[in-house]
Length: 211
Image (cartoon, rainbow, N blue to C red; front, side, top):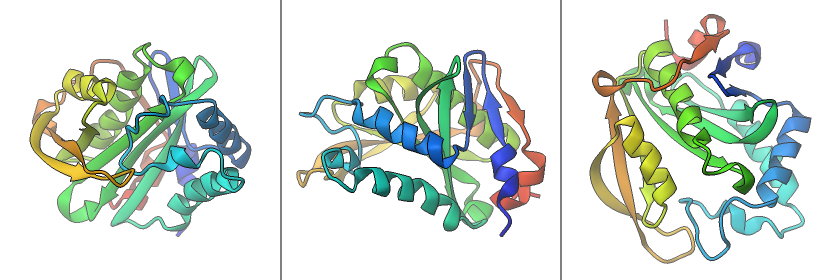
């Protein structure tokens, strides 16, 4: 499958640009992660990938993860890994993914920001960008998300954007069960809080199983 159109896809908001990264930019993103995302005594992610910062293979594994999202791309199971720049400074990563998307029209998302860029509203703005892509660009019916108990920053973003809790499940990123608050946002409830410009989507629509 020819994935070139994905590299022309970009999302712009008043302060951010989101797009796929080059290999050098992904390496830079890995360095940003290693500078810190969260205190070591907490784990906000369902998979404890940040515990691998000290491993000698971390940089290679990090790059391979991003590369594999494209290698394994298909219309029914895609994972868009966008790098996020704020005023031309790389600040984090925003994911949007669809599983059996052509059938369900439901997307999921995940994100992180380097510690130095947190608390500035960037998290809300970058998730707004991918939700606008999902609902307006890809005609998604709903978006799911969630947050682990204790991750109030993620919870606040979901609350601001209109998600509703659908239940509480469990995840064990460090081997101990932690409550996970499952969230869902319906297209009818979506009101984008910031202007979002979606550039280069039309040639990429078939890759998302749209059109």
